[in-house]
Image 1: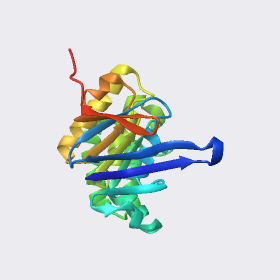
Image 2: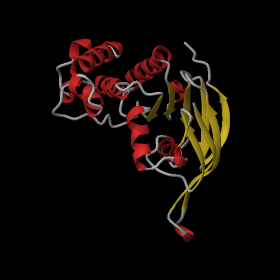
Image 3: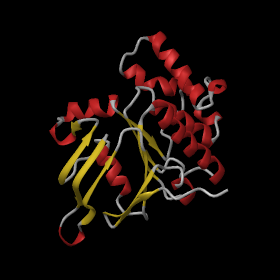
Length: 230
């Protein structure tokens, strides 16, 4: 589903240059949830931005769902982000004046989905994330965990092949964060999507199929997720 080959990304030049990624390579099979761990500055966000087509590498190749990103023009990358990739951010990124249902429906409106089909998809997704009874509430009326659930539903609106989540539980308490991560894992299973999730929480890593650890822009460890203990 995702193939990354010898990826390099540097910001700045000369003595002040920051080498965010140094020859990163890995692959993610379809339907797998892979967690990225590493200290702040290790390159996690840079890697997610590159795989999601939000930034371009200095060298290397990225293939997502059979598409080689370097061969896509700006319009091709826009279509990739709109149709094949769903993004979930730490800050939720919801539109304050819209209801939960309206926020989830934004991507479908951009694709000019038939209104009846859009309403059915929105209702299905809100039910999937356990918020069927909160459809008319605005973000300010929801808890942090509920807002992140709305953001997950919105990311799934266009049936993406890949979910990219950057510290999706970073603003949540431990219990709520674990519930959101469990929801992400359930969504990967039920919707058949692939997920690449950056997280610093050791407990959450146990819910992933596999863990990649980044250090100073390089992958320092591939491994199975640690087992969860009761």
